[in-house]
Image (cartoon, rainbow, N blue to C red; front, side, top):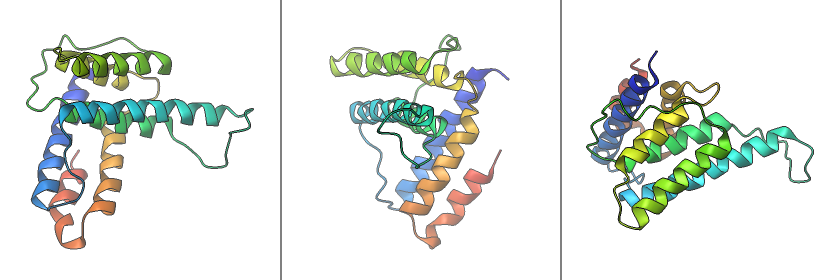
Amino acid sequence: MNDNDEVKRTYTLVWRFRALMEEAASPWVTPEPLDALRFAATEVAEAMDAWLRARGGFARNSDRHEQVLSELADCAIMLATSIPDYSFSGGEAYGQHTLDGLIYLVACVLQTAALGGPFQFRAAAAMCAIAAYDGMALEREVRDRLVRIMLRHTNEDDRADLAWLLAEG
């Protein structure tokens, strides 16, 4: 499968989910693009934290099972959120990156946006790089994260449309 195709489907899923969450008057509101990128930066850093904890050998290691891929999915959700109405060109596809490289990519996107520069292509490219991360099934991971968000931030009456959307695929 082409990672860019998966990223496009994931992007569409995130924005359809956000629209339904807004209709449901959920407290899980859509942040402005710059804040979405700030959230993306925290999520990619949490992925590094999870990776370090999973390695063991450090005093900060815990019994809590952190998930690198789940944190990267959260990062991808926020990257998608930062670029409403984006149209993928196909040129965004990136090769495989280490977690260190993903942190750098997201930081560059955030810095570019914070300085008022054009960041949309870079944000989409960072999503593609996350999709190419070793072991990542981006669309599935994002669906799993959105289910968790739905259960936490909606009431039962509002879940039918969201559950239908998340069950697709």
